[in-house]
Image (cartoon, rainbow, N blue to C red):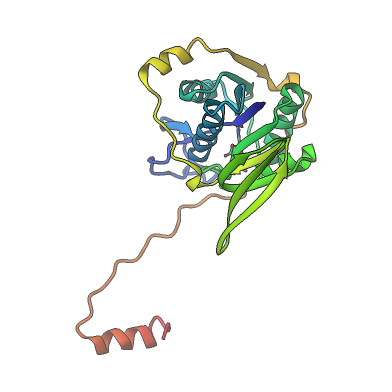
Length: 249
Ligand code: AMP
């Protein structure tokens, strides 16, 4: 059993996002970049499946600039066996990512592809679903529990108002939700070992995939500033403001 995990390099979740002055996007110059947190959960799940003796290889794939190799190396330090970078400096939107992942799936023939449910930079929540559609494979999105059986998986999904448990046939696409697991930290010896693990770089032009953007960003703006609060003198004044100013009661 082979597991393919998609890992995206994004602005670190601790960084305060700044919008570029020309409103064309988010400023990424001199900003700390890390693995998308949901993808760390995806790597952790794949490594746990391998450690449980249910998978023989975990391959990680990232698509983007040369620096994505750092993201791949981190996944290798967490326990993945091998990495693939489909390299491009061009912008990749979810449909292009899904098509490029399909290219990798067609080469690697994994039994399971695990992705994050969403990337915290574009918040698209589209790639896993699009990949499953392109492959014509079943999908289990927002997974909070994965149990592997013989040629099938039982997946608990976080849905509005509760949990849904489904059984799907392999090969399949799974996307991770926050409660699936708690990713480990990479230990120094494993970071050193990861440097020697194989990492293949494929120029995007060699894939023959049309990755041209289909969506145009018109404008990116900061969220509106929160107005300062006020102190009221009495409950009566509070009720008056709620009733007549905020009009919420
Ligand atoms: P999105 O649909 O953009 O919210 O991304 C969902 C998931 O798709 C991410 O959590 C990643 O697992 C995967 N993904 C998206 N973009 C990339 C990328 N450039 N390289 C590798 N994986 C990606």
